[in-house]
Length: 393
Image (cartoon, rainbow, N blue to C red):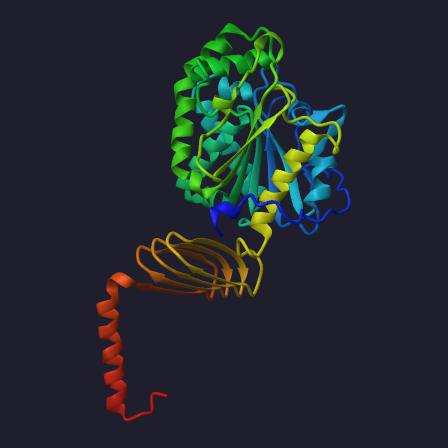
């Protein structure tokens, strides 16, 4: 599917019955404030996609912050509104101790990234290749970027990286802002959530700014793997002004690789919606729903059964999940990832890559750079057939 089609708006995902919160998976223990947890908000029986929301800085270490981040006037849109538009999504919240993540050494971010990977590996054990989307507010985006960099390099969590298709950032600092460095942006975020953050916390946060900035640098090496939505704030937050400005909130990717969308809200309110009729929420929901459609539609990614995709171009990428699928790629520098049983992949070109997980899969790779060898092999086969006196038809 061409990248230009990734965000084409058409045929919104069918609505379904409202899904109420289910009993939490890895639910937080009220006696251990600030521990890590992955809480399931919505878990439909026909789930075919996972959505995980990750909060930002929480210097007061409030247990409810994981939900409060996405709640306005008692309405948690992730469980009340979004399931009506994407009824096939399992929706979860990740909670973590941001004081450990951002207020100590750089190892804190790595640790929290590994924590979410561990939780996801457990909850997705029965379906490790289910498509995965992350929705992040503020510094929560840095946790996820670090986690994905780790997942790509670590065989234990590689399936999580391969399954991730979408990233939604709400006011996540990707770089320094206008006339401000990355460390200054981080300090503004800390002041936003706590009017008088401890000096030690501020010092640690600014001291880690170089490391946090390199997370984005490492992450840029894998940006082509994902669809990205970047929402940025346009209202000042009192005397603090715009906390994460447009320049800081955007990765700055060309074309359709990053959809850049302003939200009429400040840093705190950018991901809070009290009504499903709020125009700001409609904008967010439409974009998320389109992203989900892109990955669940057979026309864009093979995730069903008995489907066939034909590609004839350079740099084709295909991800297949299911059984008895078929894909043909012609061109060069193609990549195919197949998960399931009984699938067939044919690649014609050169510099092709194919990864197959499952049983009874078939892969055929024909390199244009090896044409002479292939012709020689074909000639030998024909010669043997002729010598046998058998009818080759």
